[in-house]
Length: 161
Image 1 (tube, helix red, strand yellow):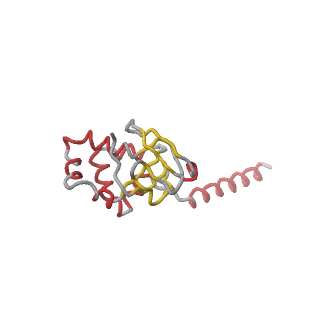
Image 2 (cartoon, one colour):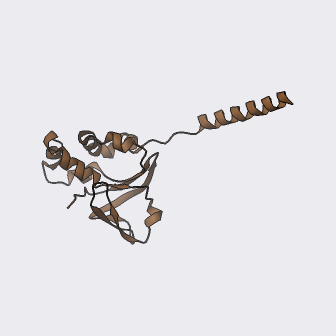
């Protein structure tokens, strides 16, 4: 009987090891952004703001991620000005305005209008009644799941009031 229990335990252990090695670990928000060339400006800004550690933490977070094209729409010199060390607080405010605590998938808000508190402290207006918009930005891709939240891609950089 003892050898039977040992055989069962070994079989269960082998099965759990096989399961754990076959399941891929999802990447966090920063890893996903770094691997996507349309977020190079966002990644540079997150690094300059010192927010990499925060966005690699457990979260969960919902990130409205502006593309490089969205950053390019800002007035000339805005990005380089925000990236200066003396403007770090302003850069942090802009970036954290794009982050909502919790994991909000598009299906959670479909057909609704709501306001959501950002990590920066202000609220953003979300309209998911006809497409999805956040403040003046249009969501162009939704539900990019990460290990610590979700990314929704937007076409405009949102600026806190």
